[in-house]
Length: 69
Image (cartoon, rainbow, N blue to C red; front, side, top):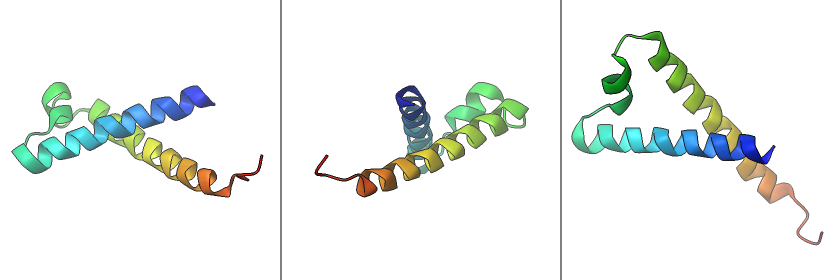
C-alpha cells in the first residue's frame, strides 16, 4: 500500500508543478508533451485527480490514527 501512496504523491506533485507552470508562465507541460486533444492527456489529468483524492484520504487517515499506539 505504501507504493500506491508514494505513486499518488508523485502524480500529485507533477500535477501541482504543471499548474504552477500554467499560472506563472501560461505553459501547459502535459499538452505540450502529448498534444492538446489526445486521449492520453485526459488519462493523465484523470490519474492526477484520482491521486489527489487518495492523498486527501491519507491526510484524514493521519488524523484518525491513535497516537498512543
